[in-house]
Image 1 (tube, rainbow, N blue to C red):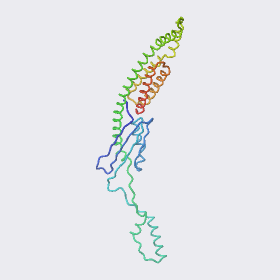
Image 2: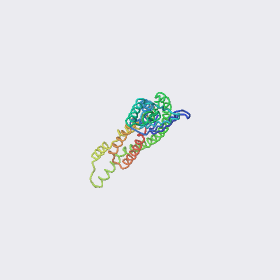
Image 3: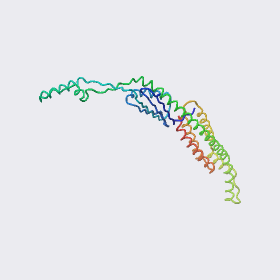
Image 4: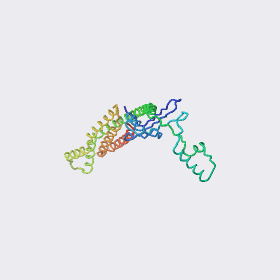
Length: 293
């Protein structure tokens, strides 16, 4: 199945949970699979596992993944006492009191209000639980992306097939023109010689030799055969149940090479124009192939 590399997918946890996750993924064309994941620092340890899930489903494309969550729990932080620091604060305060002969007003409230004596420490989330929560969201997002890739891919496939039919028609016209070139050249050569050599007998064997030389130089039979073979290969490749983008890219390059060769051999303006038309269509196909997985 022909798959595009342009896609988007989004999934979100059901409302009512303490932690509500959202996963958003989008992809565009790229030579290889390039995954860029953005998520909270507390989840960074899960990056490789998330990357592995995506690797199992996608083959090519630049994929941006955004993972966020909202915490609706009453609190996931606990107050923590730094007893050692509290003791040092107390010792310092007692020393100041004694050295300055101050009234002893050291209280629990005053010590615990000093910096870093009591701090709020967030509980570490269970990464296995988080992965179990976001895995279905990632899979759902990938499902949506694959659905979109499939639809876009089928559109690309249909348009490319139409372009191949147009190229095939041009190839047939080029072949017809090429077959008539020797006859047309012979006729024009004879007319010119008659004008230039009035009353002088023309050596028919010499004319035949010149026509044969031109026919050999302008022959495009092999290029036509290879072009038709490439057209058939593109059609077959588009029907494969596997990623075909790179293979199509190679075939299109070979098609363009054959068309260039035909153009370099052309001695007929009509043939040259048809070669230009084919090259324009091949370039459009090449751009479309760049977005096929």
